[in-house]
Length: 229
Image (cartoon, rainbow, N blue to C red; front, side):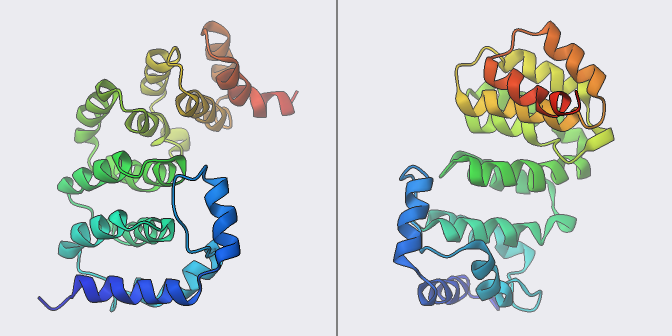
């Protein structure tokens, strides 16, 4: 094989090691509730030191990307997952149907809002634009899974759709999940409503008034509407 996965990842590791900052790492670990280890590299620096690995001539072929992403995902420091997300986004115009299984793996492993929200909007959202015939199948599967991160993805994948948002679907998902006692679900409900309130504020306000939403979801959903008076 022309592309050597382990060599590629070893070079990324070396770049991260050279820029590691234990003091920053301590703060990042605390911010992420101790869920992940960190090298302590801030986003701007991380992107700068890894930009060469993002260049088309240096990055993996599409056929290798599944293996590369899964290997990066298994490594302990969170910077590897951040790099994996931004690397995978480079391939979005060439996504094939079976890449959805990689998205599922990423959503359900090392799950936290920082990666799941990126996957939802920038990867899954783009995927369903390319393969709309697969959308309902996976939304149904994820909603039935009882996995909060898959369900959060269902609520958030349309964040960038604006006028093309399927409002009927969004409202249906919210109605199904509004009674779930889970912060990350309630926050996502509010976020999705707030985002669409930029497009049709009246519809969002009417929907919120008719629903028995949590205080968190309602507060988040109305945030922009209240600021406008």
